[in-house]
Amino acid sequence: MQRPDTLSLNDAFSPEDFRKTGHALIDQLADYLFHSQARTQTTVLPSIDPEEMLQRWDADFMASGDSNFTQLISNVLSDSNNLQDPRYIGHQCCPPLPLAALSDLVGNLINNASAVYEMGPVNVAMERQLIRWMAGLAGWKDNADGVFTHGGTIGNLTALLAARQAMTDYDIWTEGVRHDKRLAVLVSEQCHYSIKRAVAMMGLGEDAVYLIPTDDTYHITQRGLSLQFAKAISDGRRPFTLVANGCSTATGSYDDLEMAAAFCSNNKLWLHVDGAHGASVLLSPEYRHRLRGIERADSFVWDAHKMMMVSALATAVIFREGVHSYEAFSQNASYLFEAHARDEWYNYAHRTVECTKAMIGLKLYVPLKVYGTDLFKNHIETTHKLAESFADLLRLSDDFQLAVEPESNIVCFRFIPKDVSDLNSLQAELRCRVLQSEKFYIVQTMLKEGLWLRVTLIHPLTTLDDLKDLLNHIRELAIS
Ligand SMILES: *Cc1c(COP(=O)(O)O)cnc(C)c1O
Image 1 (cartoon, protein in one colour):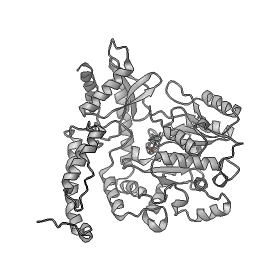
Image 2 (tube, rainbow, N blue to C red):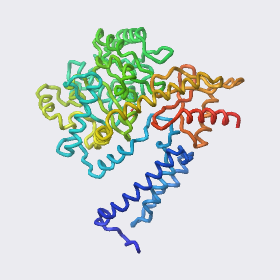
Image 3 (cartoon, rainbow, N blue to C red):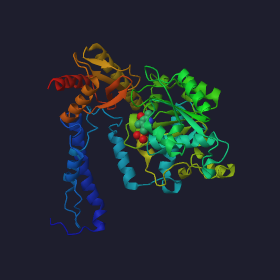
Image 4 (spheres, helix red, strand yellow):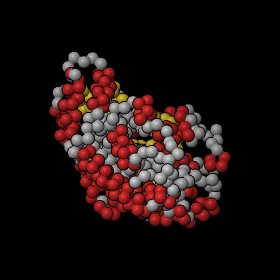
């Protein structure tokens, strides 16, 4: 059939066309999933440089479109990183559950963008229930509360804003930061960069960040904490918050939260736990002890787009005393206003940086309801055990070295063949070659002893054989 020159808006919104195109799309994506899991889709991430990529995606938009949807999507799939391939073991981005992706599709079509109840009633209710459920897993009571936000970076910022207002005796939102009371934040030196960025964005200056040194296994220590606390005081600052990792990005190390909580209560500090990656262990009876002490924290963030198998972005920011969630963006700290805002718990705009906000709750709520929590528990336990087995494998080999015992599903290691003097350059070079081969996606990280290769075992179908293949692949690349 001849295409009409200009598609009418009626046709663009045609339910029948949606049905047809949609069915074909699902077939296309199901094939993609099949090939990804079979590892026959040889490209885990395409080795295309940014300039070339620009050429492939031109901006020659015609008055009437000239591209075929199926073909265009096919090109998107082949030029994109393939997180659904079990050999994608790079960053902490997960292959979303297909059911979560379908739920997201629903959210995208109905688009009940929901910073206020009136605009997205179901999603607001789902987010409220999810936050309470997540808080309950941390051992918190009914007065815990929080919000969903677009990512851990904004989540950490939200928590620190609330912490600062809660720990200060004047209205920072209205007055701004008083310069005679310089504040400080104690932060594990292994913290994600979003913490420093949050502190700087809050107008405190990056100098307000006091980095707590970590031990050989990348955990903060009591001694390091005391030293940096004392240093901040002697610099004329008032520390108000400690940010601990649960777990850290680079090595997946969990700080001792019981020690951190005791230190905070002795020194009147707010304890914020960055659980962006690691809070999901709360679902596993076997691994939840890693977060022992979180019940005494004041706030934590939890990224569902990392270990909960939903697409980016879906972050919960949770406060043990839920009323503090109203202090992050309080334009008037008077309790009158807060009481009013609290009556409107369902209008999240009081408590989020965003105005229009995606239906974040939906894509997490639906799989939890349909599949139940065991699936998530199994995912945590499978990936953590795989990390332990991979660590065993590395320890037993004489040409690889393990950085630290994994406490999560993140493993750092390096290739140490005999007669190599510059180990750092070797790792960087090998990683480049792995990426050029398009067979695996791995990343690298700078640790105390230099540069290491790093994997995040976040795909539920990655096996130990995949990891053996990775090591052999690296060995081959080293001699080629
Ligand atoms: C991923 C991560 C973040 C950042 O979260 P985004 O969702 O990427 O913004 C913060 N902290 C830790 C520990 C992380 O692993």
